[in-house]
Image (cartoon, rainbow, N blue to C red; front, side, top):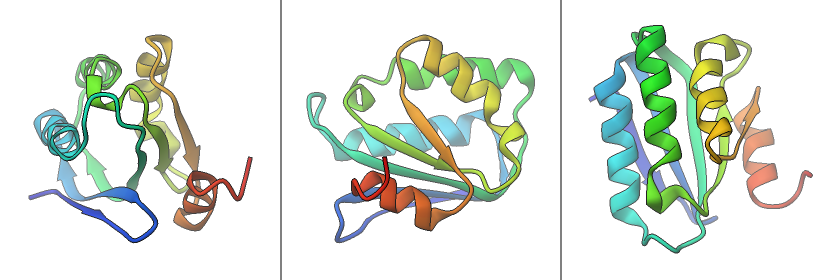
Length: 122
């Protein structure tokens, strides 16, 4: 499996991607997160993309952006994406999802992302 999913003591659900990741694996991760939460629940979600190899085409990235934006369980989510300094690998996904109402903030480090999710950074 190209990702792991866990919930820590700070009520943050973390998804860490490793190895080569394609469209189906990204969708599978979203589906697993959605199974953990109710549709109206407000969640904190940390997506770590610092150690993965993006195998999605431009078309796949657009498709995944739409998929994210329409995941009902994520509609009230506070989402932090940790991309390190390789943000270009996820920029299309985030841009497409953002235009459809999905909110995500990108960070270079997990420390900053966690601080933001916990309200320590604005």
